[in-house]
Image 1 (tube, rainbow, N blue to C red):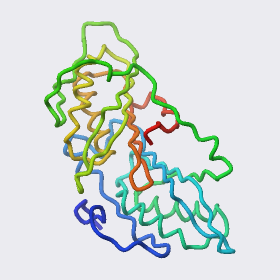
Image 2 (image 1 turned 45 degrees about the vertical axis):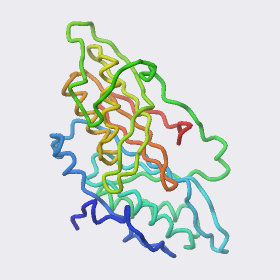
Image 3 (image 1 turned 45 degrees about the horizontal axis):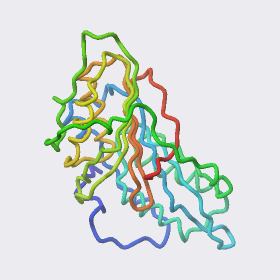
Image 4 (image 1 turned 30 degrees about the horizontal axis):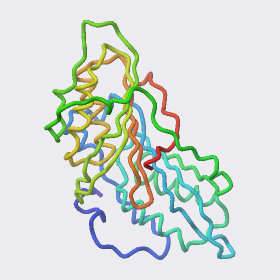
Length: 277
């Protein structure tokens, strides 16, 4: 079925499920948003994925006693679909009154359903209550772009702000900003994030990069698509040899989404939560 965002449960009154129902998952094809920014779906210019954290994951054991865990899901960036976030939450709510014999059974069910919705193999990990204390709060590292005093008056994505010094020696640099905000394309609600950019190439102008990040402030786009737009714009305007764009979005409805897109030679980010998540 060719799902479009307007058909999603997001922004609509819904009846919450009383039992497990995989049909609640609502996939949305990535292809249209990628075509809008000139990405060929058959030859993606990046690697990466979308790391989901669900903080309200529960089910019943065979005696009817509730279990609670943290759920971590990795959706590969090459998957043809994203999973609409409210449908994901509704689907997980269906587990609340459903009995499973073991955690392994839950993992199998989640992996099967989410992989089918995404159209590619999805990785699922449950963090048991005994390991909650090991969960880290750790801010993104690098140069803080937000300390700059800049004047900004554009609040839709403006790639022209991105500039690199082509005549300067190649550098390796990591920077971050806590000022990324975009809006849900369905409800118009704000999506808040911290974004980290790491690259090797001619020096990228810090003022222009900060202005570019802030220019997303009134942009309507899903989290995953915003990160792909950032990756694409920086590659086209600044032409780094290597690039990584990683965003940690604050949670909504008990879930957060953390998209990462990078050139093939860049390491995956180390997982930790920011204080705002």
